[in-house]
Amino acid sequence: MNEQHAPRTDTETARQVDEGIAMKRAFGDDVARKFLLLRGIDPDLTERVLTAPREQLRH
View 1 (spheres, one colour):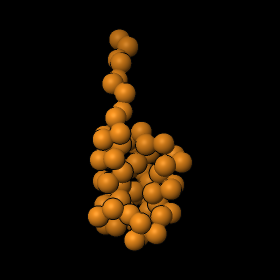
View 2: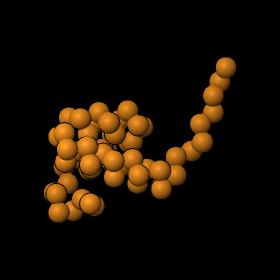
View 3: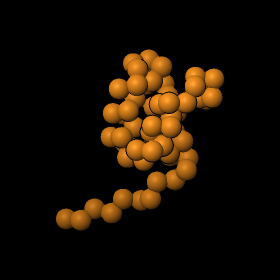
View 4: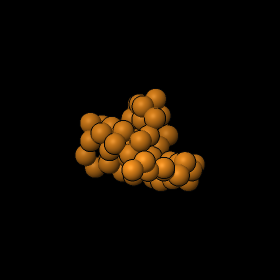
């Protein structure tokens, strides 16, 4: 059985990134990295989120 997934929307990606930022603040970079990658966020975007200064991150 071949499942087709709907393409990710910008809104969905933004929501996942926001959750990743919250994970970074609560649990650190390693947990946030794993969280974002497991949710299908692009590795380059994941690294940019994790290396951004705190004042640049939303929340």
